[in-house]
Image 1 (cartoon, rainbow, N blue to C red):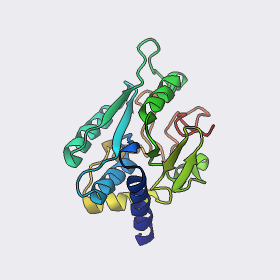
Image 2 (cartoon, rainbow, N blue to C red; image 1 turned 180 degrees about the horizontal axis):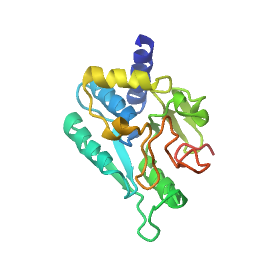
Image 3 (cartoon, one colour; image 1 turned 180 degrees about the vertical axis):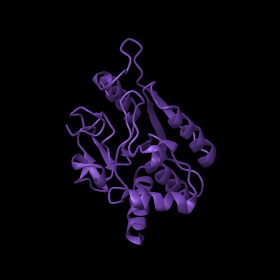
Image 4 (cartoon, one colour; image 1 turned 90 degrees about the horizontal axis):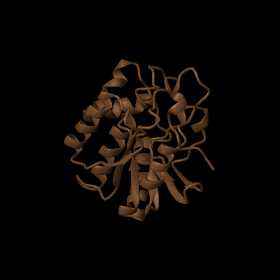
Length: 208
């Protein structure tokens, strides 16, 4: 675990020291962000210059909204919100999910940033198996930090329980990966995302 701690800490320190307020953490209120935000605050002595932002599709689980509030209360952070809801074409299922509206929200979120931090891990699936802790994001012209790239589910839960961190209660109901309520089912890895379709990514982390 020590090597993983070093990798997490070193990667986040690199992001903070090189980019400061020009780096943004994309937060979806899953177990990965529980660990990332806690570590960021420890690096910055209880506060952080890193922007913490989320994309609100308008169809998030109520449990995710509860976790959002728990994060703000526990960590003392203010989460920037970027709207990707679509009243004209509701996200009633995978066919309307993760559309250009979500990608456009990400572009707004990353506007003015030099780098971004994600919770991507190699273990999550074949499309992420080659993820490096620090990468060039050529699509967005930024540096992409993936501090948890080498971490497993077991590693995450050990840290969450050791430090009694808040986490999304849907994880206790069999949801390993949590997206929108309209198209996420319980499942291991990312199997519950867009279940029954060939979709494997939401568009935010696809390469150019």
